[in-house]
Figure (cartoon, rainbow, N blue to C red):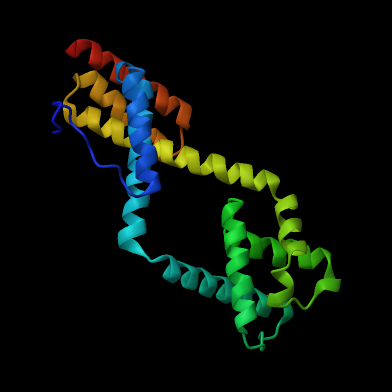
Length: 227
């Protein structure tokens, strides 16, 4: 506590943590805690930042991740090359090619893709439709021509993957919230209804909006009872 009696917290060194701190300050200033259905997503963002920071400092070093991503790229490329050409890719990887792969993986990640997406398109679509580019080499497929062609041809895939990831995260979050409701104790009929909805969502008999509606309605109902 400072001399003036206020509580001060040290400014986090990590940029993501600083960002999250500013979000919490703004949420408090604007009274967002009074809107649970909105504030919940602030907490969800906080959890995502926490995972990011933990993985950054405890899981895999950036250098190790680059190495693992490059290794995966090479493995997939050689496997698909053998399937397409019915030959082994016999060229030895050079330091320049290793650097090109790293740059390609980085460009794909920034665009919202993984090397799996790119290499699947390359061997299943592009090289089938454009045999003049066969046989491919690692150096050639890491060029801007190929990367930009892939990005241009897969704009819808990019949007679809982004929506899928958002829906996946929201789905997991809603499941967690529904389990919290079950643990908190509900009336018998509500408990039964919640469990049936979870089972239907798990078997894909209902979609995300229906699950969201049930969870939010029950949360609102039990907040009012506790008030």
